Length: 336
Image (cartoon, rainbow, N blue to C red; front, side):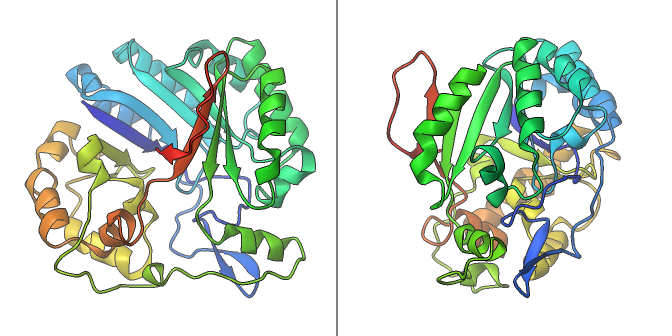
């Protein structure tokens, strides 16, 4: 069985400095020309393919995340839930959101199905009040609280995810306390590992000490013959569904840009991996996916695989600390 990661949409209403929707040019956030904005996954990919008949039992869990968008931006989010539950009542699924989208009916309906520790909603909130907009630019704090309380009061299982930056690291305990007061069942903090702190300073009118640029992200780099690429998609048996219906190994392939993106498209070479056109079993059994992927990551990894999953270069793992209320706290940050 596979873990299925899904990008329901590329729509989002916020302007986060580290988001891949944007690039940083002339000290300001600019839209990336490569991103297809406001794209929405066709519900028939679930209904007529991934969750049709026996296909529904290919998945051990479904994580609706967002490389470029917020899942709550998809108007048919309730229908996606219904399809999954009707096809496989025991399936695990959860959604990530910034918490500002959706009306009260949306959240009450989600609470009917996301109401257990294996079916829940993760609210990504890094600070309190207007301080949350230092990173999540454009947020409305009252909306976050309203939506979170509506969801929880209707029986929903909520997780609070805090990205820890330099500017908010001293407030972890305060956020944890507020989350518990609101009825959140689980609190998770994740260490930021990029140059976002410096971007936040700049966008808030403070001169940054430095702007970090990862040399491995600026273009194609030479991949050594001896490398340490460990493909997390193969190790964890996970796949990624893009909002256009394409199946790729992981979110890093979806997030790739420039020459690395071109290299990926050349390697795929066709539309055999599009779930709007081909049955998911045929995609997973396709020679390119079943055999060439392992051979490529082992013997001649693409640049994106090298910079993301070579443990001596990048590493797509982040460090996190998870606290479930009512259980003993684990105070050690660990890899996801």
